[in-house]
Length: 147
Image (cartoon, rainbow, N blue to C red; front, top):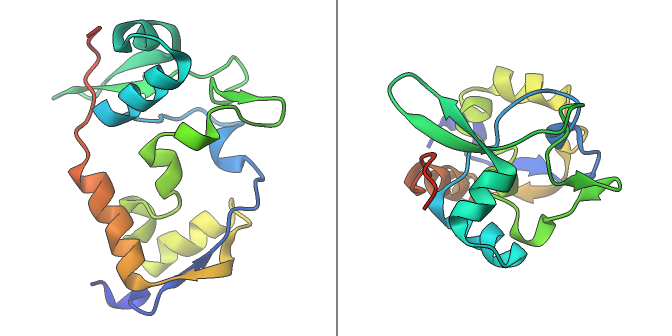
């Protein structure tokens, strides 16, 4: 375990929505994410992908990401909140415990400038943080195919 967060990290979501609005980015989906979201919308996976996803070419592979609205808000950000919160993708559920953010204490501090929930509220053990990292590492990515 990286020494810098072995004693845990504080984070409580303040529902500020900074992580799902205002800036362009990707919400990469796993196959399980697509299944959960498609089920919630009562759609086949392929139809869900057609309506709500885009293909992202990463050079050596492609990934499936949620689309954005014209103002860069997530396609599911509506009426001031996440409209799919109970079935939101793993990438969203695991924030801010992402590999790049947890690479070192400086990255964590930089992320805190954009997220008012970092370094406040509930303490997440080092083991819990590692479990989020493992969940992300072990997810089966969704390629952009209409299944």
